[in-house]
Length: 458
Image: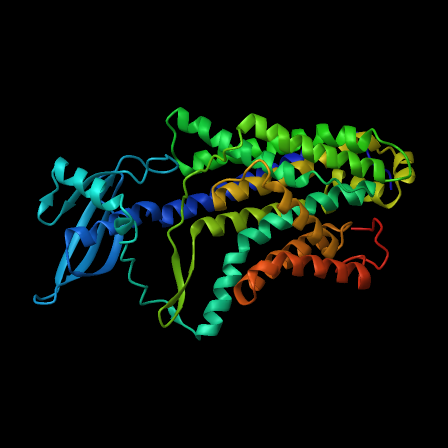
């Protein structure tokens, strides 16, 4: 098959547009479908015990308030010697979206009228900011419309839903390993730190918008997404060029050692650039959607979990399409099968390597963006564990196979979640490393690979 020498970037740009489109659409659906901020709802509910001393509080409904940046909480107050009272409270906040002071209470009104400035100050200073006030959230009433299921099934289902973001993160990092190893037969051990670079770029991109007054979660995370993809791709292409592209020879050990040095360099680089103090973004779209219930146990899912899992799935499907249906993918598969024959057919090996490193770095940066979106932030040294476990996932799935790497990421994410749910969490990582040893002994090629752990067809 004759391959075009001019390996263009149309496929890579198409993948980037697909990720951005999926992110924007999913985020827009979540934002339109859920206008309640979980932090603001918690603060507003926490004021109710102070407004109704010695009363039992049952929250019936939390909805958007009548003015901007406000919530309306409808609840029942049950006193021992009086009939049940149906009341409401309207809380107004200083900001919204990604602003760090979005949970700062600015005004409070009840059916009896607004609280005075002095009363609001005393409520915040001597109740909400105390341990009693922080623990005083009565919670919301579980949805009566949720499907009733057995308790054992509900707990299992909740663990599966909780594992979705972790699975997406591991899958994207595993794919980064598979892309480089499938092409060159070499492992780049710096992808965990590239995920940390993507996390730092996400925070930086979002913070720049906040500085200019844009607190919209959609705009903030879209800017963070673009920054993470760019930072991951550029750092990976530059670092990989010197640690993999310029180190020739039949042995892979010099290149492997060089990537270890690159990971340490990136770790120290992040420590100096962003400081040892981790910057956290406030949680967004974290109000739980009830899905099912088993007596008092409610199975729920947050919009941000749907978004992170949706972005991961979209990126995975886009990457599979890229490898199977584009000129870049055909060149990648040809070079992975036989580098010399592909060169004779016109494939520029160094250019293909740089493109692959950039694409793999973009996937690592995207995983860092998902970490920030789901968990709030990642420290300068936090990428090491993610990278190590993603490498295990790639080996278990088949390190030269892109679908295998995705399957391995899913398996490791699900394994960690279920082990934490049913077995002692202290030995979870030990169990994962034992599973890796078992796979290397009995199935060295992984789930979708062959018994021989060498680069294989995709």
